[in-house]
Each structure stands twice: as structure tokens, then as C-alpha cells.
Length: 287
Figure 1 (cartoon, rainbow, N blue to C red):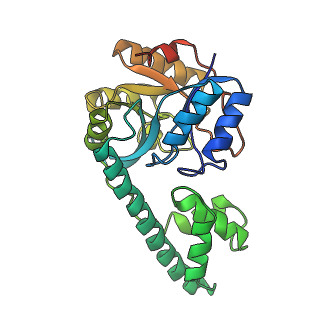
Figure 2 (spheres, one colour):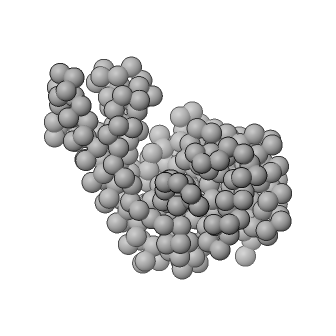
């Protein structure tokens, strides 16, 4: 049984394929249970529910939320949490996500303004309103820093996306919408869903690695600061090694949490269904 509970689309966020193409691909790959988890967006959910039913794929509603987490000591950090199995028509959830998406657009504009200051300093022609519109037109989902980076590559300003981040996007960053863990938990649970900590030991992403590389320290942070707000942990992920998976499975079993997993596929390349997990993962969602 193939399961993938972490997939992005261009319909709702920063995937390369539309929700229609994603579900077609999931069918080709014999995925039995899936969830589209776009960033701060429910835009793809209605279509996903209808299309997966047509293709005979079991479906769980999903969303990925970026949370500002305050560790016991030090500065706040960004962490990602996955909401699952909620009512997509819940008004409070819809309104909060709309606020977050509006902030994302404003944030992108402010980042571009900061980049223009750097361009002026370096003698590079500034981004114009036409450039900003070109970036917006190049995406279907939520506007974010990776889209700006891709446009810089296209314009020949930088050689690759990493250089765009290293030279401009880290320095010119603007804070994301300040969603707290308690608020994220409340809006998902109030919509009848569950909240899951995403990829906690992802060395190349938004994870606890930024404050603790030791797995024991990571789970201690979760134990002391998150248990009242979460229902589970994403144990299986492409950038989780076997040691990480084993450690987190032991932790979730000890604390009676749900264990989830997924490819975190943005179709760059297409890796849907490649993260192997047991069929028991599906049983946790049976009503």
C-alpha cells in the first residue's frame, strides 16, 4: 500500500504541477492514500476530494502551516506543521488562511523593495512593477521567495537559486505571518482536524535542526513545549534517515501520537509515493 501525506501543487502553493496533474500522477504510481498539503492554502482541496474519488484513491484533507515557535532559550524560529482531516468549509480556518496569504503577498513586495536597494548599490537595474507582475504571472499558488529566486536566475542576475538566496534573499528577508503554535493548533482542531509536526529532523529545511541537531534534544523540546498542541509527528520524510525514523517512531508510540509521512513532493523532480511507510499509517485515519 503506497501512502503519501505530504504533497504540494501549483494550484495552491509552490508545486510544479496542478492538482489535476498531481492526482493523475498519484494514480499512475498506485498511491492508495494521499493528502495535498499546500502552504497556507485550501485552494486545491475541493478538486482533490472530487478527483481522488474518481480515481479510487483515499484522500485526507491537508494544509501546511508555517509557525513561529519560541524555543525555551534563544530566538524564535520557523517550523512547519501539517493540518489533516479537517472541514475545508470551516469559516475560521478559511479566514485565517486568507490573512496569511495576503501577508505572504505583502511580504514578497517588501522583499522586492529591499532587493532593489541592493541592486542600486551594485549598479544593477531595479525590479520594476512589470518584473513584479511577471513573477506573479509565473506562479499559480502562493507567492514566495523561491519564485523571486527563480526569476533572478531567468533574468541572468544570478547563476542559480542558491546564489539568489545567498546574495539577496537571506539579507532581504521580511518576517512571515506570526502564527503561534497554540493558534495553529486551535484553528485546525476547531475545524475537526489534527496537527502534526512536519519533518522535525530535516537538515535542509524548516526544522528543529536549527536549534538542536541531537535527536534526543529535539524530542525533549517537543515533549516540553508541543505535546498539548499536536496530535502527531511526521516520522517518514525523504531527508529523514533510518535513525531519525526509528527515534521518532519510538517517541510517538511512547506518547500515543500519530505517526505520518510523505514525500514533500513539489514535482521538482516527481518523487510522490517513494517514501515507504507501513499500512498502519492509513489505519490511524479510519473513522
